[in-house]
Image (cartoon, rainbow, N blue to C red):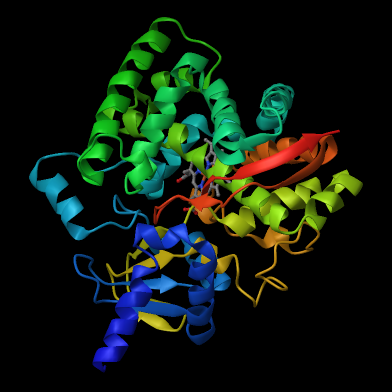
Length: 421
Ligand code: HEM
């Protein structure tokens, strides 16, 4: 390999782990589309601090690996980070992460079962009246803001947070704390979300500790006085006939509280950003409200707020034309797979009418398929329907801004000017 080739590979590898590069998604998609045309699997073996991995760029391979949960394991390193992060955890005696996305096999299946009834289509359908109420509340808030707001910060984020916290049973007054903790966990690398912490690692650790403290109190409360909420299900959940241990319970709280809103919020704000670039999209939705199911999926495909998960080969495996040795790892690039020209017609165009939006892989696949996808879809449809029917006009009122994270990110500021009918 020549020096230039090596520099090119390192630069390409950085596309998947440098948080700052996710702040310009147009540029990111342009560069990744070029890579995807040339190769299905990009070997990244020269990034300082990261052991090697292949990036799977195409839809077919991301789906195949997601679905083969015997061959490919998630492990406690399901999210890409510098090797020293894990080494530091191990040497300091800290337990490794143990949420659903970090578990495999029976262990994963048994823990997922603790809450899975709450996320089944019929259970989520019963929550629709409450989602409607919350959506109405935030449309009212938008009206009261007088024709100008930051749609991401003022509407998308608090709306999606309220829906999930309502199911959870976290009171409204604690929502700012939950938001801060989630940003500490997902967005620690974004300077705007770093707070007073000297570095992202400290911010993350601090968020995790405050999270643990908060939910220890919730556990004690729900065990003493059970309620009809998800916090009670987690607080009293059993695995193999025994109460879930402290570590798994803590991580259960973390995944449900964090995975549920930043993701959906970015799908909504990013979908809106795309519709503002092409006003004909919102008009199509206004003229044909039935399009809203497709439009919600298109928002998720287009934004792919979860940027990746890792998978580890339990034995030698062949994927995307490469042989991965036992213990070798691959990065599933959902945003790349969701723009794969082999699957999506005119993949680089946002189109609420596209007939292939439901082929999206933004929710993953297989045993780990997003537990909350039904909630996310309903939240998006509910808000999109209201906005398309009630807004007379909406336009950009400044430059949108994307958050900086290689794991979960999206449009964090969307200044808009609008009028209601
Ligand atoms: C647009 C919004 C969302 C997107 C794009 C998204 C995406 C994902 C992805 C890619 C995974 C991993 C799937 C895999 O490894 O195959 C996942 C897992 C998960 N998601 Fe979501 N998600 C969203 C909304 C939600 C919501 C609203 C919740 C509700 C609490 C949620 C809860 C979870 C949980 C608990 C898991 C772990 C499942 C497991 O490992 O068994 N997500 N999500």
